[in-house]
Amino acid sequence: MKKPTTHRRQSAATQAKLVAATQRLMLRQGYAATTVDQICAEAGGTKGGFFHHFAGKEAICRAAVDAWGEMGMRLYAEAWSDAGADPLDQLDSLFDIMISFTTTRDEPCLCMVGMMSQELALTNPAMRAVCAGHLTTWTRQVVRLLAEAKRRHRPTADFDPEQVGWLLNSIWQGSMLIAKTRQTPALIVGNLELARAYVAGLFATRRRRRLARRVPA
Image (cartoon, rainbow, N blue to C red; front, side, top):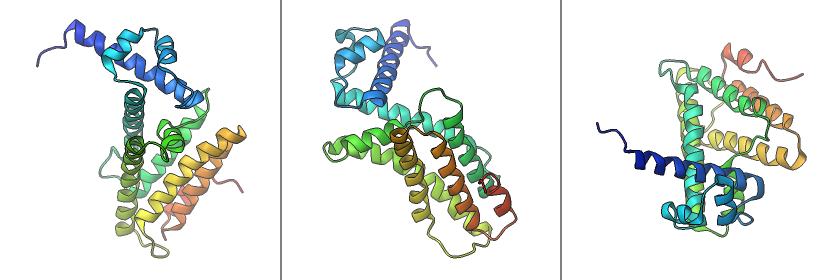
């Protein structure tokens, strides 16, 4: 396999800087308030360099959302990296990973996909579709784990894995939105622990107690 040329490496590095700058700005001030000039300044580049790589603000917003979604799934994938692990253990690990996002960073816990969904879903069909795709990718993985857990363990009552998967996604995204508004990051952790306890309660198994262990009295 041929190694990338110096030019290609520099081009990729420039694109990565522009995408990262876009993520920082749009997470802080939204899509409408962010300009191409601001992105260039944040990335330390020129407008000529910007338009060499991207057609405009919407194009780089899409690249930023895609990069964010792919990065997130790489981190989440640690939860199901052991294909032979019990799906309830994998779900437990997923909750741990989500909670870690709120406790290991100085900045607020935000999601580029969620924020752009909130701002653009009603006005930009193309970006709505992009965001919906990333939200669906996460939910499908959770649905798969819930369905496998339902096959392996006796549920306390029948439930629809897809419905529960979207519920958990709503809790995750909604908690970040409300915590941003109220400036209370601990709210995200509390909601995720309640969601963990809810999932544990779906199954009549000893893991139920362990899954719910972190919920405050």
